[in-house]
Image 1 (tube, helix red, strand yellow):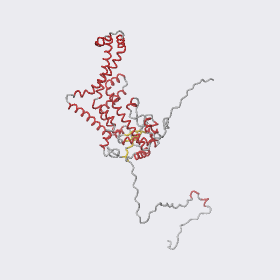
Image 2 (cartoon, helix red, strand yellow):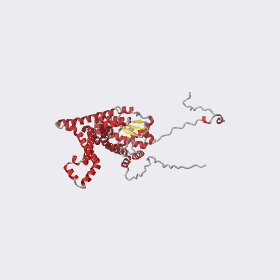
Image 3 (tube, helix red, strand yellow):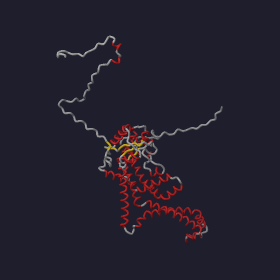
Image 4 (cartoon, one colour):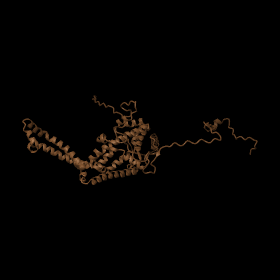
Length: 457
């Protein structure tokens, strides 16, 4: 034990003179460096209280959690969220009321019957008048026939062209008359008692609204289960690390303190869509942009705007109001696509054509008008979040849309999305030139030159 006045030193072992020859160089350990001294910008003053810690930054988080009817921020309760969505699309709501209250399929049925009967009557009536002027023409018509040139010309004209003219006039008049008759038939039955007519109107209207509300509640409550049945899954760790920060950032820029759950669909179609409680992103969309954050952020901001505006609630409610017609329409279209025999398809069309006309020529066009306006509003939300460039990249890449569209009649009248070129025009920055083609447009096919020659030996 060392005495207090003695200085102790660590024991050192002297290395031989040829230590470098006997000990490998890698085994010679350098001395451990002293820890660096970090200068504090504002060192604490002794005796002063510590400054308060800055409050943690509030980040948006999924508002769904355990709540079944969780709603976007800005709605005080679930009822206000539902009511806002139900009455958001007034065009689609008008179409649903017309169909459910005024019996549009019945009007189409009587209109078709009237068109057939009117066309036959017009064709046969004018044809008979041309052959026998006295049969249907009356005294005035017989008098015209007595003129030397006019009478012969009129008789020949009616004989040659009177049939098609009468057929066309009869179809138009008969179809309109039959349609109006079918439209007003329930009110003709109740015309003797105004109370019956009022009760019929209110009963049909209340029934349609109640059915729409029940269907909306069902779709919101069962959305998670229906998506799981459809094969949608939770994102993986890597997908969450990529997409969740983009979703949080878009929610912050849109001044939302929450966002719906993010789910992944393994479909190869480049698509994304928003429900009442979920945002679904297809793997095809991630692959299409090679996981580039900018266009993905724009798409997520677009879908967040749909969620904020309760657009899915509007779609659920309108479809629910005419749910029986929609279910029959889905069943008939499935049967027509399933059974390709001409006789079976003709039989299905002969039975269900009033229903098909109602859905495709009344409900879908009116609902499509409101849906296209909602798409423009969602694009504006993505621009508001600062993703104008990314949204232009997404819209330029696809000819239809990144969240669904259809073709033919659907693309022009019933389409739920406006043409992408018009959407690009709406989000142009003032004073900036956007020439064609867009840098992110699909690659144009190169011309193929086919040449032939004769090989000579």
